[in-house]
Length: 300
Image (spheres, rainbow, N blue to C red):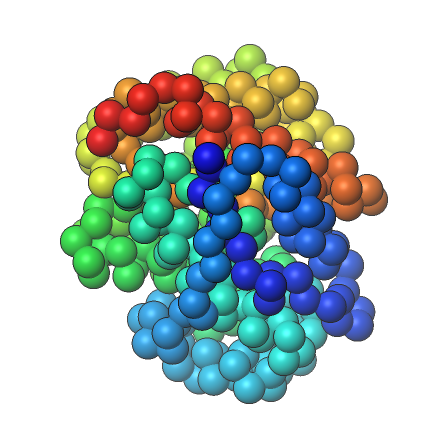
């Protein structure tokens, strides 16, 4: 069975003035219930973990649901008490998925991938940066982490929050002209022109990610599996087909498997008018990854 991390607080009511699809995580949960998966419930991230990555004043603002309006504008929605609870438990979920992957080879958080959140503010629908929070805690426990970000948007917050950390490397393949306007340098950035399709994307991904993994020999891959490189995505600028996204997941899984590296996946971005269609794309991503690990014996 595929290990899935989920918490009821992932499904928060939509705050006012929000264009984010708050029902997406509930739909992902419901679709995964139809599959052969094992459910795991995370604990909220300890406050010390949050403050190891984010400024203490910002952490306090979020946990009290008293985020200044200018920061809420950068995030894209108000931080209500329910949103604050969700923001705290998602990093705990990404950490738990990582720990499960270290044992079983693969696990997926049914939320997460909030790669735009910075030290003193959220941004781009991201409140706390679960990837950075989990990676910093894992590194403190002696785990060498490679954060592999295949969202259509550059993982600027993750790169900024982990820069210079000796136990963490960051990789981002993204649309060069997409959000954010100001990029932050990852260990390796792979910017792509608008309209890049399946063949070029997949060849570039393998040609750049494989040598990075060989060079750093991580103990774990934290994978931001955003599905917004899809050609029809509302906020994407790339042109992957569904077959291309399927091939991407199989490629990333193969690169991990052949090196004996466990992989923990987060949902990342995916945007459109039909929330069910987006949720189906996310679930397909998780199942493609998990089935690869089930099909090919984990060598770690």
